[in-house]
Length: 414
Image 1 (cartoon, one colour):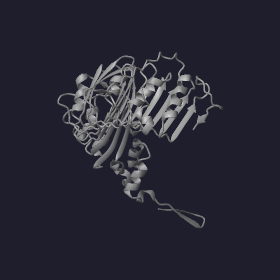
Image 2 (image 1 turned 90 degrees about the vertical axis):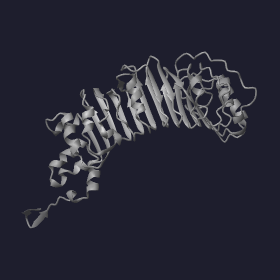
Image 3 (image 1 turned 135 degrees about the vertical axis):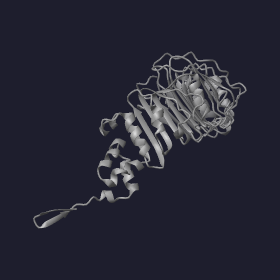
């Protein structure tokens, strides 16, 4: 395109960006909101259909208002069927208003969809009817906030789904949750976030998934929830539910890593199911009555205790006694202004734990307060850990309570 002459010079302008290859243009479009990417179709013939090849779509009801007078569901029903990418890698839907048409929105997808995230800020229902073909190819599904899961029978089969995240969602009945898991034959990763503080929720959850490898359960609640679990293939477990009760129906022989935060009365029940674990992290309270009779953690190599209100020498020695191959011990004491719980009596081992004599190589203690019982533990471990290579003890910061004999605001002893 030639511009008018200016003096004796002639300026030339060209649309260089439109001559770039499709892959590069799609990369550029991926950095802007999907609604803006759709608007580029008005630029020229070159751009008219380009957005339809984008592998990732983020459709936000709030940001899609600049696409005209169409309602959000009409925008989705208009644009999704015309999407030309053979594989739609990811689809993110954010609903601002109540909708009962999520299933209808999904039924308009013609591409092969691998990942979907649905976030709703007003209660919206999803039922996954059997004719919802898009669910056949899903590998990752994340439902967040005010999504009402109402799974009919028989529901669609998620034959490829490996990751399922359910965050603050609501279930129409007990069977909806059970049916949803029952139609995920290859599910490997399940994340549950249960918010009983703000939303009504089920009193119990049954998780029987033979293929499951990762399970995360987080709960905000002031009432108890029962979890019945059978996951023989589990590799990773995270539980943060201080009001939850857990019933495991079988051992988890493949378990490698576990993070546990439960109420003090549930800790023994849970630890008895974790004897195959290699890395274990526990939220530990001084009132916990640890009873590991006839239970040995033969595979445990790394133990981390997040301590509330300190730790008694007999408690830590009991854990070490039942972890004969332990190589690393990390103690992380959290500051607390509450009155210390009455410590439970735990019998002291008659002999030095095997792991101290033959295997323990690393000791790390953060938040060391210097109480008499803390000194007893430190002196015992340092005096009996014959293979210890590294020991790091970091005193509690000033203003966090407790005391420490070290010098300076945050002394570290190595």
